[in-house]
Length: 206
Image (cartoon, rainbow, N blue to C red; front, side, top):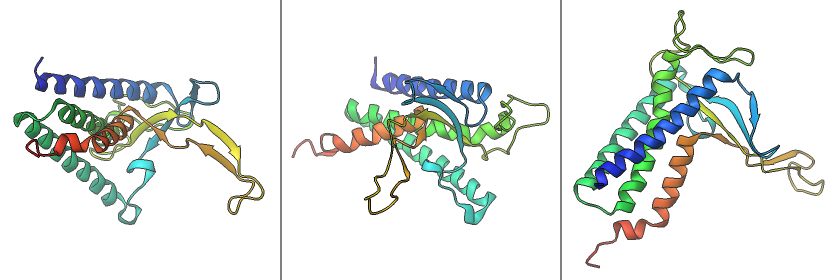
């Protein structure tokens, strides 16, 4: 199998897994509803992220801020796909191309949510499961969708000791962020590329 086919297959498989799980979560769970995976240490917990990673938003600009975030995602994904294609054409190492393919898949997975979910689904609430293609229309315009997150692993749940210099007595949870398959693909590919970047980018003659 050629490197191009391997890259495309990897990208398609990750996006498919990401979107299938998101569609199931969106149409079967209400907001904040959880399904236990590992007792009280792992859950499928439905949340929606209207902004960037960790829920960051450009609140200062209102709807224009959300639109700007979506446009930035589109530009980033476009540049990333172009760069990956360029590496395939120049016969770069399989490690680099496949690592970039995983990164592309993660970025595309979340971009699909941002672009289309607002048009496809009715709003999810704490009491109502979203409906696909509702007669009244979706909860947002094209480009105003929210990213569906679901993996929650509060592995350590305790409280800060009384002698702690800050947050004494308050609840401490690790790992607190809720993420999806696309987020995991992005994170893993970035660490992978950073760890092995010398072997990817070092001049062969050197």
